[in-house]
Image 1 (cartoon, rainbow, N blue to C red):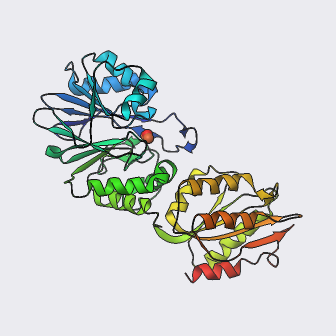
Image 2: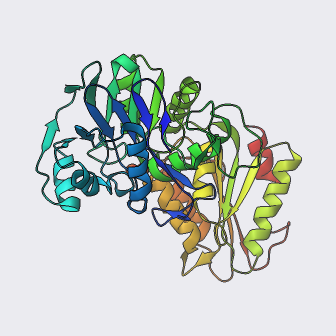
Image 3: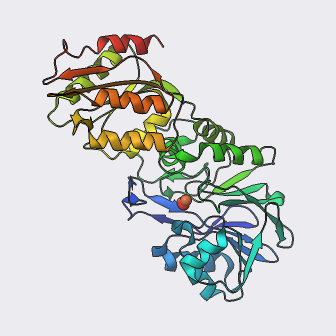
Length: 401
Ligand code: FEO
């Protein structure tokens, strides 16, 4: 796809409809885009590249945009291979090109691609003139790797933000948030950030979720710059929805819940903890409390992390297994801790047969996260029954929050 974004800026990225699991973990029901941009001035800069499998399409996009003109600079905002895999090929195609990165980019670049002959190392705030426009570079470490930086063009009021403000989902019908649709989407648009909103939250929670502090630092650093366009490496070019997507990233990176409601996660071996989870969901629904159920045994954990970031209350159900939390729920809770999630209400429940440990251990994890425990939890022996595991009390407490 070669799309004119402005007089100087062309989109030359690609859609990936074949990869089913991103980073080997996260489902891609709507595909994903790898965005790359050309800034065409007296000199030409290519900003980021695309994933390894797309060389022919990527080069065709570039040629369609600039014909036989040479590219002067390759700006490497981020070294993760979904954006850097084509660096060696681009250098082969444009041997005179200067590769631009910062001091943390260099060892990663050499490790992935070998020694780069023409490398220009920039510091925070450095700039390069292309003639009528100037690229300025701003280091944003840990959004999402140590070497990450963003590139800003004041003349275009355009920020090339790397993974920041990215989303899962391939683009169809265009590339800006006014034109683009989420490929394969059949649901209702939810308004803010259009149909990309759910996939933006899922992308943030899965990929960037751990880095709330550094995202906040980056947002502060970029506050006050004049913006007409944010060009991320995944998803639409944000123009009309800039205030919404920036506010969404701000809230997510503060670990501020986006809405009141309950994310219920559970695992179940023989159905007893599952019955308790469904009873809880029914009691919450009866009281008008929004809730979603995630069975971690049958569903990819990606969606549970999305709803963890979305809702203000997490309720986790786990049988006791090896005197511990049942592995699928243990792994989820490890991910909650790893993402440094805070500001959530919490409650635990689960079954055991001869010695209960899971509820106590779930509460311990929640306490380490600083969550607000809504009670001691519902631990019950052997088969589920409403008498042994009364979910009406916790539903009443949640409804009163
Ligand atoms: Fe899309 Fe951190 O790479």
